[in-house]
Image (cartoon, rainbow, N blue to C red; front, side, top):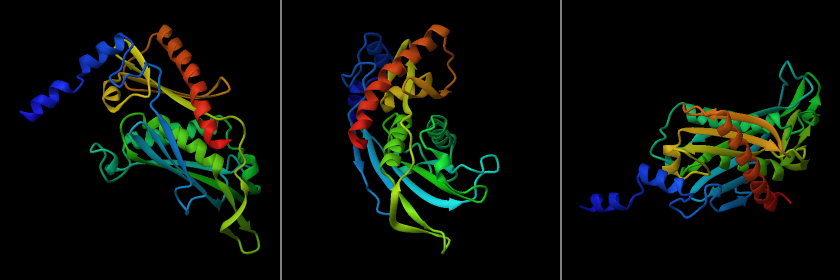
Length: 269
């Protein structure tokens, strides 16, 4: 009886789509509105930079660590960047312990691509000795609660964590990193890769979907751009998009990214 009553009040897929056709959502947001964004900085005393990001009930933790290693053969004068994402079982019953699933791999790679292709990190300035020794920046993402849109939450967290991170000291004589001793900030540019994931649900386009909305998403396009320049684009799910629909996605991404940039600036300026 209780289950029947709850089901009566839960928004079904058809009801959600009908609401979206009228430009409404069950949480009273507009199609292009994000939920409330909150950021807590420096939550770990072991990371060079760390944040907890909440978008509505969705929550992720992002930590930045630095180490010294050899450069990649094709970029002997540049530092390295490694982004990994772990979807913890505590954040959703959908996630299970074990090897990374496709969703985790995709989350890490899409975040990596936005950071890397935008030139947000000045990798050349992370070179210690060309061809032999460079700094490696590790960005680790952990899902704490999945209520939709982990993708955008992860990129926001990565940008802010990198902006507040402090470089440790590298002791050339001892050949080791002196963690706990600060040596300035990570060399970054002004190219903040603000990511916006646009979802197609039925005939409607929305951003920052709740868990129920994301389950109905037939297509997701994640675009990271800086100053109006697209640095990365990833299309997920099987639904195709018409050219006119793709144009609309670009317009939405550009409009919403300007709003998100203002949110990010609250925590990095």
